[in-house]
Length: 34
Image (cartoon, rainbow, N blue to C red; front, side):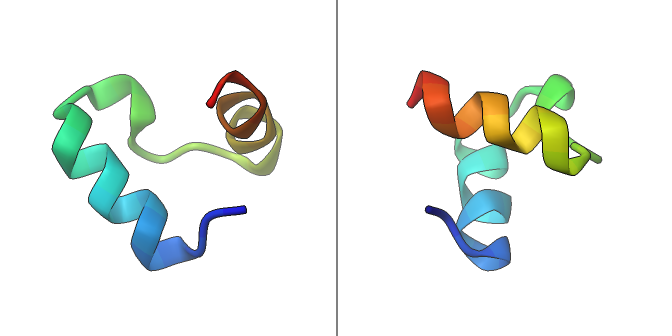
């Protein structure tokens, strides 16, 4: 499971606006996809 800082770093690495402002449900889906 990613921490907040890890998720922010991941978002910058992906450079994808879809990863910004994720709610818990979307974060859970993101974690499952990873």
